[in-house]
Amino acid sequence: MELYDFYSNVLNIKNDTIVMELSSLSKIKFVNKGFMVAESEKPQTNLYFLIEGVFRGFFYDEKGSEITDCLGFECGQPLVSAFAFREKSDIYKCCN
Image 1: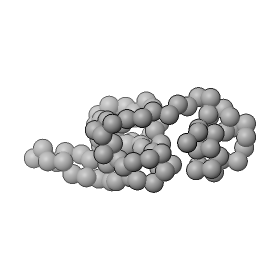
Image 2: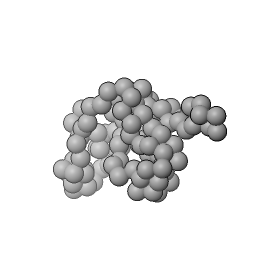
Image 3: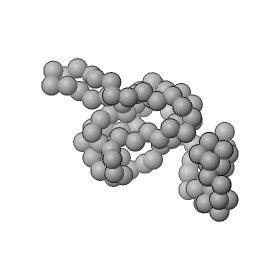
Image 4: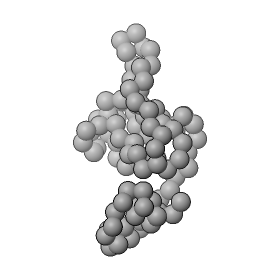
């Protein structure tokens, strides 16, 4: 999928100037299973959108067990881990 198509068709952005600007500032990154998009207590400085595949958000409980918080599988779903960009993450997000 091309970036222009992603922004205009998947995210439904209709302003061509905005789509062109976003496309010029973005890149498609292919990652393997286990790639960590965000890690707990670290600020998230990149904004990722799922194009294909599955991701999982999780945290560790007081016993050290992984607790799944969320799953994502829809094209266009943002992979964010905190309520504010560049704030410390509350959970881990990885590609499955």
